[in-house]
Length: 225
Image (cartoon, rainbow, N blue to C red; front, side):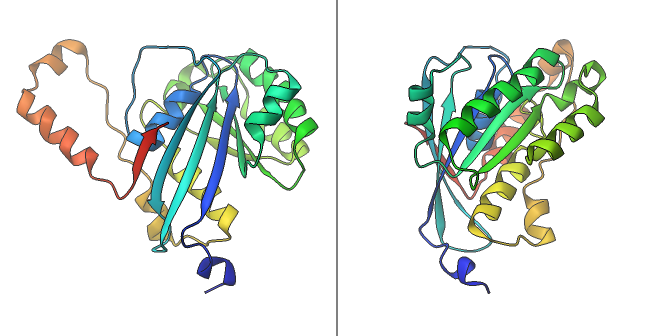
C-alpha cells in the first residue's frame, strides 16, 4: 500500500464544474450524487454546492465538495473565488453542440489565468446517448485534449453511462489510489433502455417502485448545500 493510500482516510476533495449553459453540468452532478435525471432544464444562477461522502477503494470515508457553476460568463474575480482551493476542475461540453465545444478553450484560458498548472483539469463530453446527433468529430476532440494536456471522458447524465466511473477515476487519481478492475466495474451502471410513454404507463407502479428501490442502494450520501 502506498503512503498516499494510507493517508486517504478522512480526506476532502473539491471539484468545480464549468461549461456553457445547457450542456448538462447540473445533470452530471445530480447523477453522481443522487443517481437521478430530470428532463426539465433550469439554468443555474451563480452556483450550487453539493457534498458527497463515499468510500474509495475500501479506505475510510472521503468527503467530496462539488461546486456547480452557472454557465454565464464569469469575470476573473468571481472565477477565482469559485476555484479557490479546488483540486479537480471539470469543463463540460455537449457533443451535439459544436459551439459548446468551441467555448471550452475560452473556459480553459480563463481557468489557467487563476490556477496553477498542477491542478487536474478534465474535459467531459456529455450526452453520449445522442451519439447519432454528434456534431463534434472525435479526432478533433482528441487533438485538442492532447495539445491542451487535459484528461478526457465521454458521459451521459441521462443514462448515467460513465458518470460515476469518470468522477471516481479523477478522485482516485487525486489521492494517488489505484482502483482494481472490480472497483472500476462497480462504478459502471447498467444503462436502461428508454420506453415510450404509452408502454411506460403500462408498467405497474409496484414494478417502478421496486426498480427505484434497487437503484437507491448506495454506499455514498450526498446533500445540496
